[in-house]
Length: 331
Image (cartoon, rainbow, N blue to C red; front, side, top):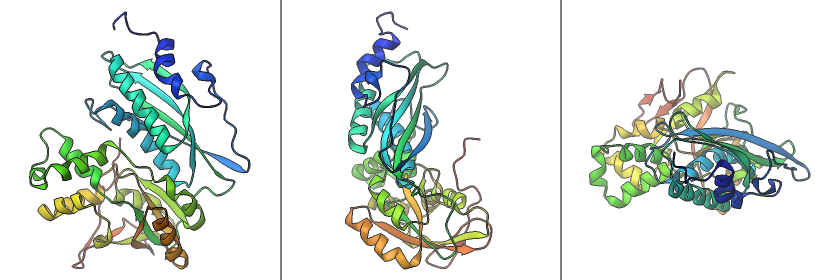
């Protein structure tokens, strides 16, 4: 490591103290304070991303920062929470540079400005292995209103935000060599898919209506099929999903038209970071109307059914499919 590099204290003062929020004392102390707003509960979540597992080491540093934020704020969004702040743990490999760190800090600041919240503290250490970024995100909801994951009931309508499968397809295009089906898509479509892989879009604007209407909610991080199975595990619940109703972007639809087998990647691939929620049928129309009003439409894709086993995906021709390994797992 170069002797010209700043010390840990200097690194924090230069790159991260400018992002510090109230209660962080300019990152000069070992801890921060955070007081919930009156009548609110704190909501806490933590996710780490690791080079070579969740992102490519040569991905743009600003994009890596926004991804670290986005995956955590997506969890807050699914709980109906508004961000208040984050704690950041940054484990840097020996080859880090000040220009990389400056771009990372800039991306972190831009993400906090876009999503809300502030940097409250954390730790910066030397990594024995690849770059690792841990974020603990803190949000808040009105007392008693956090939306749980496993509280859906038989008969509830399953809805998703945004579009599904873009990031999984983008990952295939980001690999070296890229997937062979990418060339016919054209540069604009390829760029759109890779952008979804680089930049999760936490659907924080859906928070108030999820608290009001959704019986259960989670974000789709490890694939629609697998995360839906997690939502409904136990208590005699299953689901039927209409594949034709799963929303696709124009780029993903073009890829599936070229290679119909990619629909399995769409349904099982990770990194969507969209909202999956269960809504009682009698409030579905009101819920979807409010979602449209905030510019984040929800698409009804299926129904919670009674039964056991993996969710059933029903194609337009009536073919029924289940996915035995439809969720990313580290272990």
